Amino acid sequence: MLNQKFNHLIDMDDYSVSQWNAMISLAQDIMARPESYSDKCRGKIMATLFYEPSTRTQMSFQAAMIRLGGSIIGFDNPGNSSVAKGENLKDTIKIVSSYSDILVMRHSQEGSARAAALSAECPVINAGDGGHLHPTQTLTDLLTLKTELGRLDNLTVGLCGDLKYGRTVHSILKALSCYKNNKFVLISTPALGLPVYIKDVLKARGCEFREVATIDEALPELDMLYMTRIQRERFDSEEEYQRQKGIYVLTKEKMQLAKKDMIVMHPLPRVNEIAVEVDDDPRAAYFRQAKCGMYVRMALILTTLNNQLTANPLLVGVTERDCRCTNPKCITRTEDYLPRSFRKYGDMMICEYCDERVLLK
Ligand code: NCD
Image 1 (cartoon, rainbow, N blue to C red):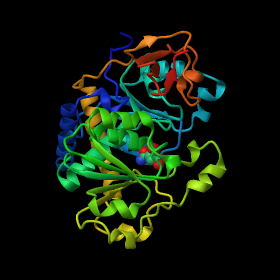
Image 2: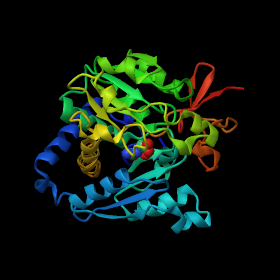
Image 3: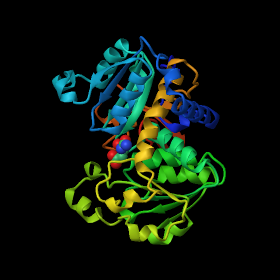
Image 4: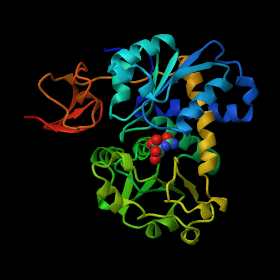
């Protein structure tokens, strides 16, 4: 098997529910007694490579490592690194991972984290790969749900906004669909609906879900409403973004339709999809959620560095030299040396990096 020296976190599916539960419990212990963890990563180095903008993910990872007693290196503007000179992903990762004990990467191309892990000399954590996945935001979301509502099962969850390009939506659905009796209400325009491959995950796991057009019709039954930003940077045209923006706005008035103990979550940044007046409602959990991100990342760094995780292999499919992923945003389109690896799915092939379905010729 290719590069299985390390336990990377590329996708929620890489680990089992019991491993996630253990990590959430550890994060809760860190929250309760942070001082007992302040020396746990002394002498360790974490690299953060952010090819795309970030506030919370990058800084919460960095704060997490510093609070564990470790140190950080990295860049948040690839234009100041050798990437600007044309260095490929493989070489950058090979070098930076040889300087570090753990590497956190955010990149605009789908499947980039899996590609990076293939050449890394240390564990790689996916901090967002284009519009595809964002597993550490999901860990944040799970810790928030556990802390706020006390459970990760028997929940009715509404997800609203950009379900097509919102990577946090894809990852949270992959995780919550593993817990018992969770139901999902997908609130979006037809143009920004959930990708088929995530719907297929929900179906395969026997989860109940329905698609609706308005927040109002979903609100009364929800235990949690997950609002998302329309992902302007992922649209093919500015006109299409202009058509989609501003359709969903959560206001104080709408909150009257919700249960007294429902919570509102949002990975942030918000643009206009939650009116500022909602912030004073005790059910607005999004700022508390952002703080959970730091504790859960402390738990993730610690568990990864202590080698307490057992991940699934990076590539399990077949390598097809003549088959090319058709997704223009897939990392294999620009990093030509990558093995073109696919899983067979009926008369289709699924790209192992970005999950695009490719028809066999
Ligand atoms: C999200 C992301 O980067 O996908 N932000 C985050 O990590 N907290 C959500 C977004 O950018 O809309």
